[in-house]
Image (cartoon, rainbow, N blue to C red):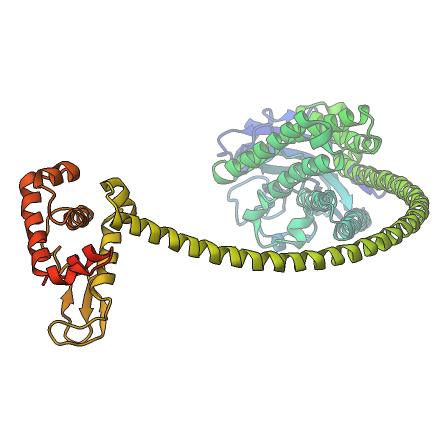
Length: 615
């Protein structure tokens, strides 16, 4: 390539660049510049050479014909900012301190993104080299290139004036590009803070991921964000690239309502997100060279495009702008992908190199239309709903007025009925009060009559008991009839207690007249000395073993027959052994004999005096 006064810029393409593969990486400049290796260099058959084997060293050489008469200053520029290592061998008139015994002599410069940014001759995102145009004739320039990513060996010869103008225009374009992204992001962040819909937040994070990825690939991030971290710069692009896929799919789910409109696609999207995160983590921990497989982004991009088409075909209109936006991005990605595969006819120079950036701009532009269309659709639905609400509220007001009038009429009618019923109820209350007063008078009369009847009943019951007792005591009765008066032990004890202490209580030990109930039924315990006396103590019934009511009846029979009833007859009547009847009847007869004079003038209760007469 000859340098002339009219030359401003020249891009080396095809056969102007020759290359030599260095699989071992052991070749030196002395070897590759020797006549023995001259024939091993091959002419490049594509517009832009690439390192097909990642991590392997490649040697490239170009020829420039210098003319000292040209007063312009020229530089060589490597356009790809992602190349890890470039060792440039520039022809020099004096031996190089780094290379000994070499003919011709070279000046060595080392460039690449594995070195600190401030070590570059030009503080520019690309790699630039100064050319010495003071020597006449053709000079050969050698470049040893090694990169762990696919490197486009784009070598450009520019004058300094052309470079300055080009660099200013390029940075101005970058400012517009990243400024648009920031504006889009800030606007959607404000929308997120206003309406709290996560689709805006996902869109902001997607745009920021796009911006950071483009800054990594353009070299802007290395220049301005981490110029002193070359190791981090080797794989920093992987983080925003992963974020682009994840946030794009999340944005797709929210914008197109995929969860409700396409449940199967929603599950696929979630699965792709999880797989993309897993791939990122595996590559980050074990194999960072996997980050270079950028073609995997085709999967989430294809899923997003298909989802947009699917939802659009099913009647959701905002999806049309979404499909258009991702169509541009899909075209840009495929253009890069096919160029990487070797389809050189698709390489249009600067346009194809920045094609993905242009597609990102179109994508953000149409995605904003999609969001706006969705907002417009929501606003239209909201206005329709508001009109329906207003119409319904008007109808409700009309119905309310009608209902109020009907209720007012019904209330008046009901009030009139209630007043009539209240007057009727008042009259009935007066009648009821009079009836209640009469009933109260009758109830008082009935109460007096009941009291008199109750008094008569008690008198009658007393008379009946007296008649029954008189009959029992004055006439022969059987044990069944006798048992009706003294049916059980308690009634006998009560009767015996009344007889025994009819004249009052007096303690047999101390003569004290106050007592308490004892432990045995109807027994009495002295309140002073505590002596307890049973009801049968010191009576004819003391220490008897037969039932007390039968003992009562035996006393009655012996007394009523004046001791003439036999023990056999008593045994038959009472169901007690004859010997027991004989023994107990003899005791009774002895008491009768001892109290003969006392019992002669006794009335029908004489048998009871016989009971307590025993001492």
